Image (cartoon, rainbow, N blue to C red; front, side, top):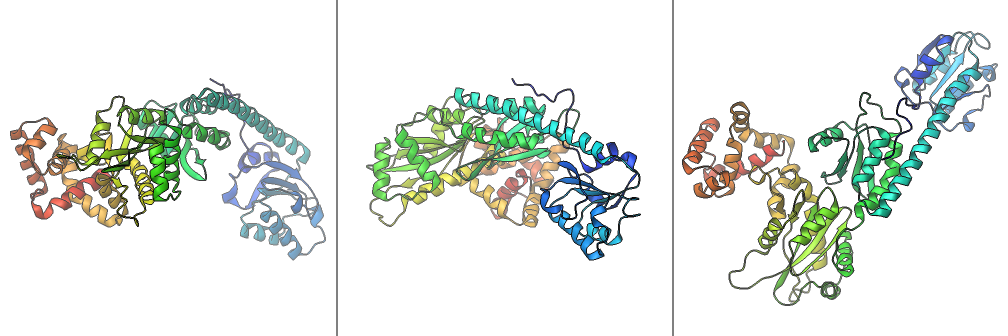
Length: 522
């Protein structure tokens, strides 16, 4: 654990409002324009009477002046002075009146208003040097503290990388330094890890009310987000974005580093396919054979993608299925695999179902979510077919659907960890519908949801299971763990609540999509 040098008293970048209140209050300040910009951070306080001061400023400064350098200049030149400061990104101009000007010239106020540059009139004298010393000392102290914290964080994160500890302890170091909860979610929307929260629900609340977040990138792609939540007792979390950015690189390395892998040849082949590198059929077959994946005879490749809070957990879960012929790798915190499945034998089972069943039976599935894609044949009789492109598209589709699968949007499939890409297509399709159409679909099943909420029943799940099992009373009752008579009673109640029979062929498809749309939050 690393401790924050800030605990017991934080130093944060002062805002213009704070400086007006704390250091410039004796000057009796009056805000002439830019009232909506009082909460901008001030990165330095500078005093100058030079007319051409703009090129010497870098942005974020509060400029203190008596206007001496503007004496004798015409109105147009004074307006140019204001525009130049605004273009430089100056935080504000504080203008002491009574020495050079009795009041701030009107044309300067109008120019400041147009440029949204706060101009403050100081009606009493305060020593500029005292204001500069007080504020700049505070800013410098903050920068020193930030550098110290970044050094502490860098040391801790690189120690974690050297030890192969994964991303969980990295988030712990961040949370300790910031004294605030930190959450890591994938770009697909899956929760990877969290520190400083009690459960997954609390982690998602942090994401919803983020104080700051930064992307975690690898090879030019955004693969995750680092999110920091509110500090206990105070929403402001000093240095949050700076420390998140400092941690993003090591976290990216921790995410993409492989855990338990197959052969190096197999891992590299999967990585090349995920990256979309084109492969000739002969090269693909050669590399599959070199990776120990069967391609001869009647067989197909079944792609899959898996995610877990730690990618090594997902990799171990896929490995535990113990398929005879498989290539796999961890790419950007997601496990990708190709499973070779023989086909064409008597009583053959669907290859997708065979792989999905094998994964569902594997030990140590835990919090791993898996999507199994459609089979791809490496068929020499079709020389025009681009097998590598098809595999790339299927692997990426599985990864894209992991977020939907992890949220278990299907009421009939709630609690499952292994899903197929073809069953997730309807959920992807729902996401592309117009909001009004999704709302109409959800409205079909909304009365059942309202009844469940009011009477603590399970009508929505009952109907979803019944439709998903072809309206077979025997199979539906088994899945729901109730007797057939109880099922019939629930179905009758469903008809009464809806006012129509949702199992009729004419509305069957609409009701299935409506239930998925309702579960997806449409």
